[in-house]
Amino acid sequence: MVRPGNVATAVSRVVLRSGYHVNSDRPGDEYLVPLRLTWNAAPLEVAGVKYPEPEIRRYPFAEKPLPVFTGSFEIRTRFRAPDSAPRGPGTITGKLRYQACTEKLCLPPKTVSISLPVEIE
Image (cartoon, rainbow, N blue to C red; front, side, top):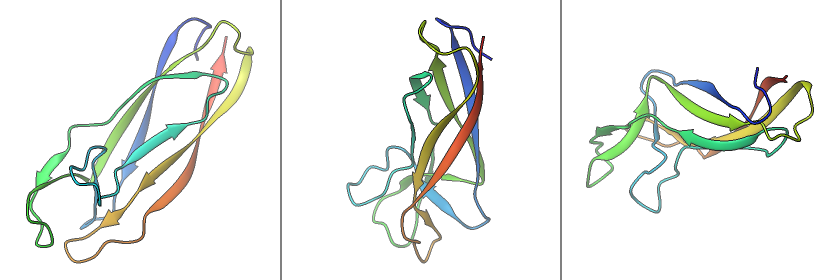
């Protein structure tokens, strides 16, 4: 629940299968697909997306260590309700883009749709 003019934080929990990793939001090399959470604009405004600190791991396929996420982790998004936001229940939609990899192979990049219920007072 958020009031117009205020900010609320939503937590998106990501759980990866054992043995898999995804690149961090700042993977370090142009050819690596970054983890990216984006939101559609209405009815709230995105005030910021905060990713966790990545783990730095070595993999046989890379010359240098890579910043990755493994296991389960949280992405926090701060939303601001503009004064003009419609009161009542609503839904915010977004997309999570990632590329899951093991030490031996990477799956094709994928984008999944996500939604978040919201109540504006």
